[in-house]
Length: 99
Image 1 (cartoon, rainbow, N blue to C red):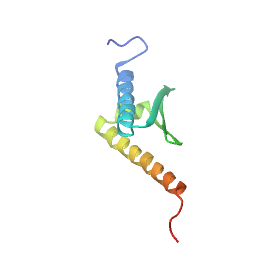
Image 2: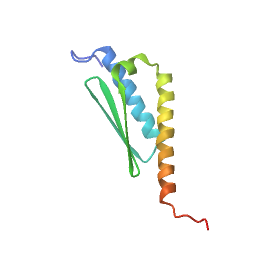
Image 3: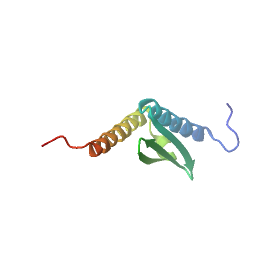
């Protein structure tokens, strides 16, 4: 695909990295709804997982500077936090069985 006048190779590189992050989130958190958008050079991600919602941002410059391996590590940390929050929420809803 040839870049249009509005898309430089760097823009496409940032978009591909953002798409890879969204794909990884979707693959690793099967019942989550993931979406993202870029506004004014900031990629905003929104994840709905169960009753919880999460948002996080990457500046376009940050996506361009980071290697994919670094972004994969950051994404893995985000996934761990999202999963952990779901467990915490489920634990709060469980009735206590202690006497």
